[in-house]
Figure 1 (cartoon, rainbow, N blue to C red):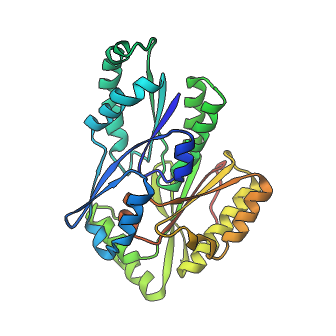
Figure 2 (figure 1 turned 90 degrees about the vertical axis):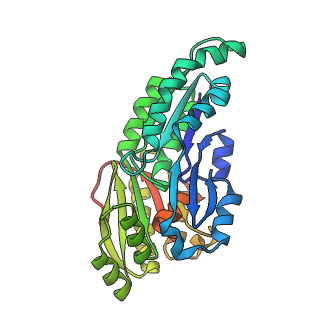
Figure 3 (figure 1 turned 30 degrees about the vertical axis):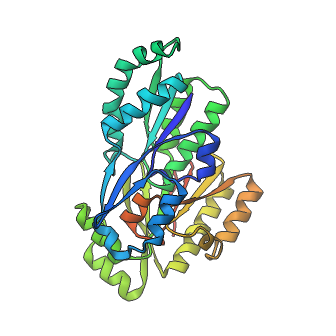
Length: 312
C-alpha cells in the first residue's frame, strides 16, 4: 500500500521521503514566472528568494490536471503498489479532489493491462480521501495513513479511520498581512475577509485567527499583533496536546524560513508539551500554493482532536 498527496498538504520533506509519498504538483504562475509546487525544498526556496511579495496575490494556480494524475498512476504507482490512498486538501477550497476522482475512473479501467505487461498479478485499488482541511490541517490524516499502512491494517479499516480523522482535524492559520489576504480572496471571489476587516486589522494591527474544520473556513478569534497571535495560537495548541489528541502529532507550517518558528512566543512551550506527552511536533515549509493564497510569513497549525470549542 502507498500514499499520494497534493502539494498543498504541508508536511516535512523527510517524512514524505521516509514513507515514499508521491506528490501531485500544482503549477503556480506569477507575472510570467512559473513555479512547480511539488513540495521540493529547492523550488520553495526559489519562490521565497524571488521576494515576489504583494504581486503573488495575482498568481494563477493550476492543480494537477486529470491527465497528469492518470499518467502518475499508470506509469508509476500501479506498478509499485497494489493499493494507493490519495489524500487531498478539502474539496471546498480546491478542485484537486474532483480531479483525482475523475482520474480514478480511467486508472481503474486501464491498470490491468499495464500490470499484466509488467508481469504483476492481482488487482489494483485506489481510494480517494478528502482531508476536509488545508495546509498543516491536512497533515494528521496523512500521518495516520502512513502509520496504519506501516501497521499493515486492511484498506477498509484504513479508509474508515481516515474518514474519522478527517472529520476531526483542525487547521488554524495566522496571517501576517490582511491586505494581501483580502486581495487574494477577492481574486478568488472569496468573501471570508472583508475590506473593512482588512483596513481595521492593519490600522490597529489586529490579526484574525482563522480555522478550517470539516471543509469550512472562518475566523475564530482576533489578536493584536502577529507575535501575540502566535503566542495565543501556540498556547491553545499546547492545551490541546495536554488534553489529548486523536493522532500523536502536531504539524506547524511557516511561509518562509522555518528557523523563525523557534523565536515566536509560545513555541518553546508547545515543543515542551509535545515532548512530555509523546506527541511528534513536525515543522514543514508552507507550500508555494499556500504562500500565494495567504501571504508569506503566515503560520498554519494542524492537529486531530475530539470535537471541542476553540477559545481564544
